[in-house]
Image (tube, rainbow, N blue to C red; front, side):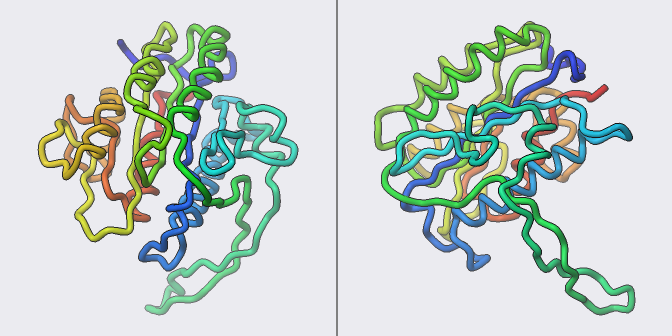
Length: 277
């Protein structure tokens, strides 16, 4: 199908993030932060970027609806808290109004004279890092189905939802592949729901970005996540190519062994849905 529907306030699109918050997400990455902390930072930065994309002179336009589902030792849950804790999906304007807090962070910048200075920046936080217990991936995918079937029923002419799944371990509650197949059968008139998967790791293996086949993937788990990932629509192929990735018509929205750079790029490419009015 086309994946060409114009995104506007009458026909928004949806992004649903599925975030593994199992105990292994406590492992430390090369940034000296845990995987849970690193993913939280990138997700919060991504939410801020999505708000900027929707901001016009009169305010934030509701081009996107956003949800975050966490899963781990506490089961499956809405990972938003506070004012956003009452439901999973929210218009982007509600997200803009409801961060849990605004932190002051240091950002290194070029001082214009060949040196580096640190500058304080405002960093809104909506999503908190957490890591405990097992990996109930099947329950998380089932929750995504429950949220996105009614969403598509209410938005039949919209660019279909995108599910961005971040995990570092195998499912502990069954085989998620069949459930993901069911998830991808959800659709609008513009196409079937898109699922993208990123494997975060502290291993020294080389990252594999947007592969076109299972060949070269190191193990059965990586191959499973590849099969659970959608092929990239034409406009995302072009965007990924512009960012320097080697991708083609068979490439899927999957990254293996992603480090911090790959996580940032994964979120950025995965949320480039069609054209905004």
